[in-house]
Image (cartoon, rainbow, N blue to C red; front, top):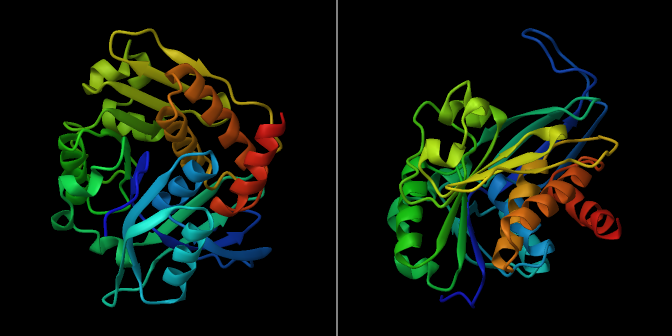
Length: 298
């Protein structure tokens, strides 16, 4: 099926999130009782697509789910937010991916992901035609690395700009040859550019890509473009409950702004502000409606 004209294609993971609220993270051999648990649709791809759609972009989602309740729930959620899910395959071979998220009282989290059907998002399924209706393509690395490389190549050949949220990073680092915009947090910046990445005069020139964005948590974000001065954005003061999904919200809102013609400065500052408000609510994409409403009011 040919997708309707859309500004942003998101290629990435779709998961069922199980969130556990704990006073502290467990240590080896320790058993903890949770203070509460929640279940929702997540995954970096789904989160980013939902954030971009809620921020006003026309979005197409490309990924894979299983023939199970999680897959059905994800497709229903995409439909409810006007996301074109024609590119989401339903596979009988694997269950929809799962993510297990522990959230500490101070809002910090750790996440363990079981890829499930996300591992079936194969490089062979993508061609230039898949991206002919889009202006930007946003990927993450909760799908096979070979698939991310193929998507970047096909999307650029189709005339798209390509953004890579280089997360999570494994031992094999991604090629950035066909990537225009890289989004990472500080730990990922260190993996890509070295522990002293913050001393680089221009990260985009270091990594040989057009633009690099680094999110720095409560200290905001920075953006380097080749041949241009660094742009920074401050995080507004918020009361932190749960930082899960903040990075995905940032990516989706930034790409929504770029699709709408925002310049890099305005896009960076809006994404930083909106993502900060996500930390005020529980959950990842489940928090975006309330968080974005609050961001719009301030």
